[in-house]
Image 1: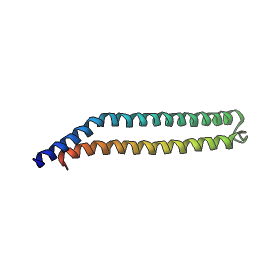
Image 2 (image 1 turned 60 degrees about the vertical axis):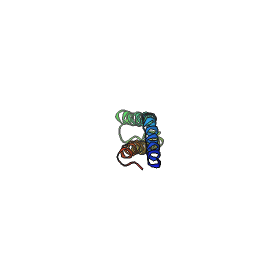
Image 3 (image 1 turned 90 degrees about the vertical axis):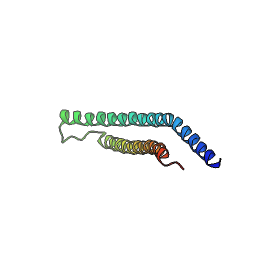
Image 4 (image 1 turned 30 degrees about the horizontal axis):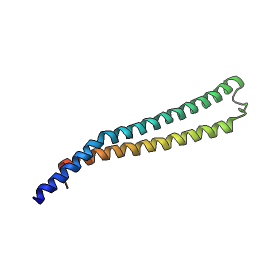
Length: 112
């Protein structure tokens, strides 16, 4: 009987893990989507600042320094850093989702 109980326990744990998987994956994908939206906002800010500098250069020439060039450059670099950190976070979330799927798949093949 002990073997039957162990199999039942294993099956129960698998069913529990498998039942939660869609919700966990959906949550991870929502987090990834939110981070992706923030990355897009960073890219838009970078583009806006770059366009401002480019307009100044076209109007005044490259020899005239933009009055807020240093501040703009800092903002652009800050946005690049923020976007890179968010991309790294997205990769970590994707790896976590892959781990969860593999864990469920492997538990089907190699039960405890």
